[in-house]
Image (spheres, rainbow, N blue to C red):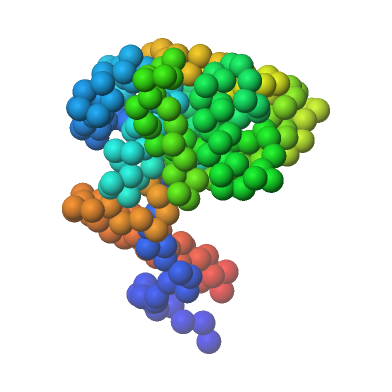
Length: 286
């Protein structure tokens, strides 16, 4: 006999693991962007002799604009104290894949590319090569070093007044793909490095060079560029992208904990709504 009684919603427990931390990604915007920029400017003055290569960020229309490898490295030093980091190339590729962030129309710097001790930027290239060889004399070039893996150091002999120091846990990624130009597809990306696995076909371009030190960035057309050599270059189309590091717990951040709880509650509500919809469909078929 078919019952006509409408059953109340079933109050079960999720049968999947709820993430403790939900990784997020975004530009330096609003109050957060202003606070980071204020700290950034203070560090330039107190720690880095007002190096011109760092005086490149500005706050306009609610967002921090400008970017170069030196600036991104310093931002990473600042925000890492709160469990955050700047984006790696793999983060940007994932963000594009799931439409988490609109990246078209601006550029984002993500790494350094070392191909030899020669020009361009031979002084910095030799210094990085020495640091890499000190860790592993068998290391081969070219390598890509995410900007999360370096810190800044004052260096009066450097053309920029600054140099890059590898962190203890630095990622040094052997990347022979960065020795040749070509076309590639977003579907053919190494999820760990954010670099193309193969070149040949696709709607995106990879630009490279054959020596020295340059940097890696995603340009405004979503092309991948590792050719440019002027490391202090920046313009208003640059954006520093921030990521909440997986498993990190930012210090002194009640707002972060509140947002995490809200995200978890919203997730549970969606599960409940899905359960109720399935129950309703099953009842309608009886």
